[in-house]
Length: 250
Image 1 (cartoon, rainbow, N blue to C red):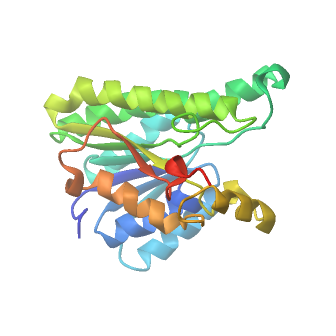
Image 2: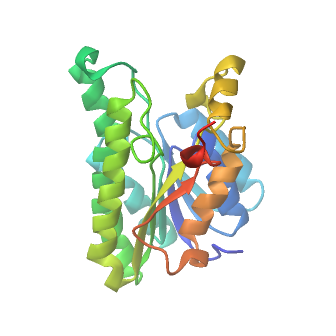
């Protein structure tokens, strides 16, 4: 029970990696506050976890909204007494295309959801964690824009690379107070964001040394490592869980 007596916020928790992390964190003893835009799916996730005996609260909302970040933390503190862990996982891919052809609204939306939301999250979460003597913040980034560039993904790459820079500074600013901050960089993962095209999945699988895509549960296990005391001397890192994508050239 690696997260026994810990209170954790997970965003993007209605499906994919976030939902898998919710199941795994609950199994490891965490008390959960789940966030996503789709309230009905969140409630389904929560009901399934409550049926196993887990304590779960949900709040639907938009991570671009600073008030939503504050509300998630307030829910954790008011309902469960504090906050120890945050897995800030919500994100979007956005419309793909070369930068000269990209609509400014697309750029703004991707940056807002993937990067500005992390600012709002950190601003709300850090004071609550410091009141508990520290904690662990994990941001979901990506290998795109870190070890590889993929066509048409300029906004996505820029937003996710920005998360790594933010991670490093937050880790330095608050490490002495017992707060660890890390970025998790998944490879291709079988989530709704990846679509359901068998041809596309086969292409993406071929980019990895393992010649397959990840199941969401595999990425959730990497998030658990960063969230738990198993990574007690790990902070400011960009942890690749990418199936060898970054080193595969054939």
